[in-house]
Length: 468
Image (cartoon, rainbow, N blue to C red; front, side, top):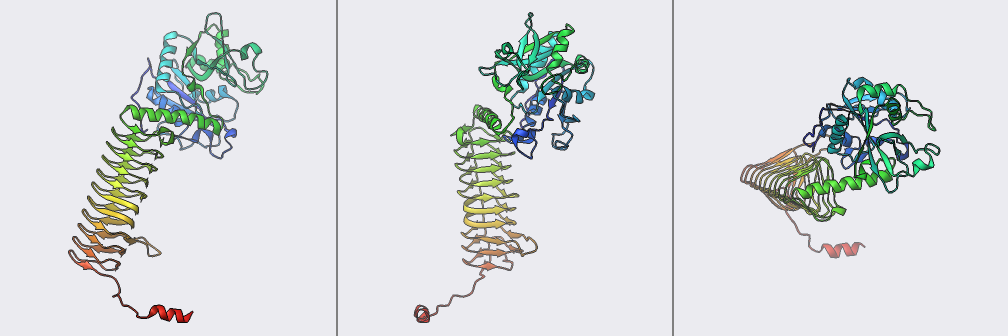
């Protein structure tokens, strides 16, 4: 996974269960909630990424029976199926076959994406050192509305979690508590499995709540510890698109700050979108209204934007791209692109080349030091090093049935308004006359002229006026 941090290993590597079986009806979407995009990754990838960064020996995602997550998870992640939507306790029970006796099980939610690898690792450490049967992650909120409240016992441990999903779930005293359940737990696997068999669905929703296992533990005099954190963003879940926008803003800010701390200048973060899989070298500058998506990479001292979109595009060092749109392209060092250029998939622009104003390039290899300065379409072509193609150059690559390739050699000088009708080859050091339509190969060093000789028709204007 791109951007995978070094592992932060707890005392022993835990198994991490990520609950992702919810239907997400409030998203009002045909796309499962946990597969909605969050800064370039499906939402569920974020807790998966954090779990792997924390050194999890196994990551299990619990999905619903519709198969929506089948084949949609990163390699190595195991899938468990919750046959019916019977609550979070039943969801964890669906993953029980993946547990090993004596291990620590960490439980996360696929729609709570902002937790970090360090938090998971610290939770696992605190749990194993406490000897408790369970450890619940908590935080305090100024407005805890909608969150389960942490009710503590006389010993300071967690007595139970008062759910607040429906009226009547919690008492007035419980609703006044500001410490909330983050929905992130560490359990002793054996005790968890035994407790899951004993919880009931005697609640307003008729579901098996995972926090009810804490009551079972307390009833058996097993310790339930609290792991309190200061960062309230870890509890931010996504129930609808408003929540998703709120979470995306925080995730995007973290991405920006990570790049800026590593030597990248982002002139206007508020107008800049950078996906989580993007990598940027030091001294690169991102100008306003630029969008770096997917697995885009830029090397050292690049200048990107303003108003530029790069999608899955690889920039080497010292590249300038201005007011342009590039998709699945590779751009060598010391290249300038734009303004208003469009690089389509399969484009390779080699070191020192130039792609100028209103130029479109598709599935082509533009040689080292070559220039396509302006107003041109280069598709399915190989352009040799040092070649200069004049304004208005077109490769006519499609005959209505198949695509054909144009090969242009080194140090070719193309006249303005030249059309190359593929398949055609132009030799090294060749020239084309302005306004030519080249349908035959041009030998090395030759001048290709493909146009009708000019003739002037005297008196044409007067004749047209008489015809009116």
